Length: 416
Image 1: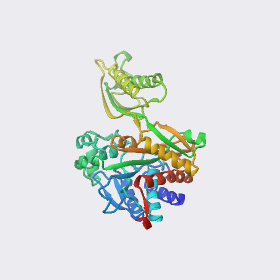
Image 2: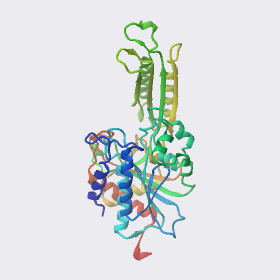
Image 3: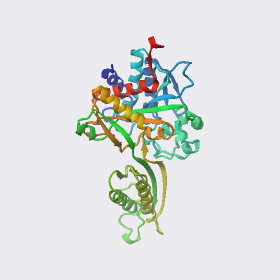
Image 4: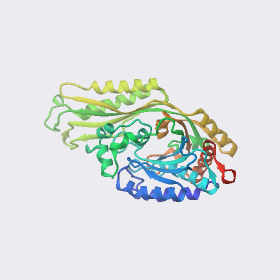
């Protein structure tokens, strides 16, 4: 039986590894807090009877297998352990602890998988560190290169490769991390909804069948600094003014694109950032999402056009697409199994489209994928007030566990 108290204990203990105690969870992938979290995660894996390894990026794996089945494709379950700044304690870690509770249930019930089961805790899903998310899943699926890690930079110009090296890992080995073709049987992820739908409908779990396409643009607008009082308005090259027009246009583009289309400027840096200085440089991100590929591509093109429309004799611009993932349909077989298990257990389920990007969307390019949502109180996420009741997580784990048993063709020890 799923034990909500175990999930609660582990989630609350993991949440102690934050740079902002009392102000939400801040745990960047290669920070001191992440370095402290890793041994804790490994310890839980060992106690759950798993064989633990860590890869060259800092992803952590716990494996349940036997020599007789080691050659078979893997059922992989998990999520990420990084956070946004001042985020919540459930986004990502709830999925890791759900996977570990599944492993404990195998241990409690003496179940032996006929296909290897791996629980994974992944790095850098959020994209906070280098303006490019889903790094772990992209690496594990063969979509990330060492050159990518050298190009990606933090706000201070330090590359992802340097950060990873400084943390004691080996970014130069990133291209060796991908699972070989057909090495995975399935990837399953439990995640908080991060929205209000399940709570409003009074449903226990969301069964996701489509994840929206997601892209991220990094924009740089370069102007010319000047004194705020002595430079006439008609003689200015104000980078922030140009950026403001692009940002306003991005909102209009998304609204006109219609349902399941959004655009968000979530990061903006102004230089030199003085109250009496005309800004000479602005960098910002534009996050663009849609359920529909044609609309996603059209919005990206329109935002890019609005950036280049600002270029003139005093303003130079550049834009770079740091992330692009097409809308993703998940495995019909796994979706139907989730629904079957939910109905059998008396757990109320709701078909859903995910407006947020998840590691599941990357794994769906190489294997069958299932994604379960559990309710978020008031729909709040990426905020200290983010909350999901532990009993609600437990219901999601029940569905997850029953589906993992099916996929691994688990047997009791007496049936070996």
